[in-house]
Image (cartoon, rainbow, N blue to C red; front, side, top):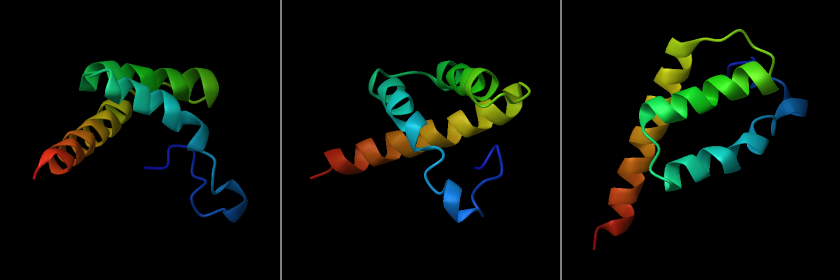
Length: 78
């Protein structure tokens, strides 16, 4: 997902890296999809200056949480 449309610009390759620590902390804290979606909404609105899009952020949060839980299960398997 590329909410501000920079993936095709090599100079902006690391644009989203600054947000990863906060997202990772939410995941480690067990944030629900709704909580992570609201966090992403705040990043988009307050940091990126985007118009709020609750559906987009909820969908992104769902993808992220599902991925995180699948990876956590994979790591715990013998």
